[in-house]
Image (cartoon, rainbow, N blue to C red; front, side):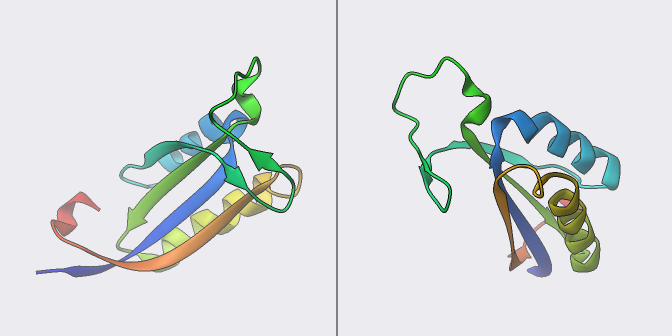
Length: 104
């Protein structure tokens, strides 16, 4: 049986990764997924195939899933408020269905 859930996807500069994942741990996310990224956006193009001395400005995708959609939105808003006024990044929220709801 599938259960309704909410997925929050955060695209951020790598230098924010530890701060964001710490916040997720502190605010009740049961886990998250990290994926290194590259892409093109409003500010610039970031490619993962080039040598980079400073990797802090590479991007990462951080995703977490929660059964409590309101709480997931609150966490997403806190991340946006805390970091995305001074750093580039985006957050999008999508409905999801999960199996094994006890994991979330």
